[in-house]
Image (cartoon, rainbow, N blue to C red; front, top):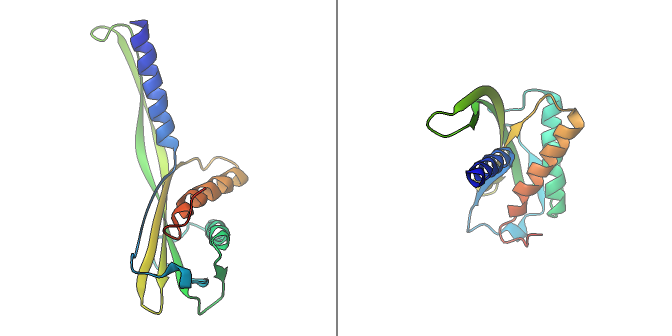
Length: 173
């Protein structure tokens, strides 16, 4: 019985850690020649913009850092690529439960809380072809109450994880 409780507790801890992890997805145009792209410029999104100017600057700075590592140079206009992002925050209910005693007549406590899930989608477009060539999305549980430096470090980590997949076939660390 003690082994079973330990196993259940370990499972809950692993599930909780997975919920806080950054999730990333990406897709790309398999016919695009990524080695020919050298420059990019920003295009503002009509929808899904950052809630304020500081957040917008932070998102662009974190993406700029990753694209520079990949050898792309930012220009004001006329880049080989256009980069645009969309950001959203969703509110979800989280249920936390803890039980004691045997399953049939033990006691269980359940609490609920609202958590914020941030999602950032980055689209990279070839303007000459007017075609999307790469798209990546990162999603993570947010804690807005954290200090701004910690939030920015989390954003940097999310973008580093996302851009591991750019360009396709780029050797991963």
